Image (cartoon, rainbow, N blue to C red; front, side):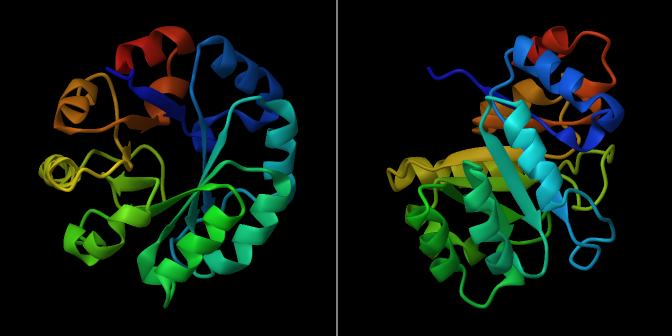
Length: 215
């Protein structure tokens, strides 16, 4: 059985000591670095710009997992590809042609994912599931860190996992929002492959212990 991958969300990192934070995450055996890109339009917050992502890429050997919470993901994709990120997900509500953008992301050699808000039904993406490398299941409403887990998302993960099994598909299920040692086991049992965690990891005095607790 493949181990659960842990993707610390840098939104909660101390940016005054970013290099130290990234080194500590690498030493703690994180699998990915999750970057929440927000534009202040799709979500009511602003975060990483391209220069900062380029710096993070230079500082870390870990794959960069970029979650685009923006109204124009098609603008961001070529620039992120130029930086060298390895994973990109976007919200299908933000584009007219999600299939086209998925194909463009994959053409750059980048893993392509769709992000699903808690209230967005899974059947809105069922036809495109065979094209996806992963689905990012939001277990909070996107835009802010340190929110509480939305309980009904657990049933959505189980349902998505069952679809994957029934249709013999290969996409991974990533979960983001309110993930901690209190719900990690239930999430993995439901079918999650990758756990994104911000507050739980960065509020810990021992990142390795926190990451092991999630696994």
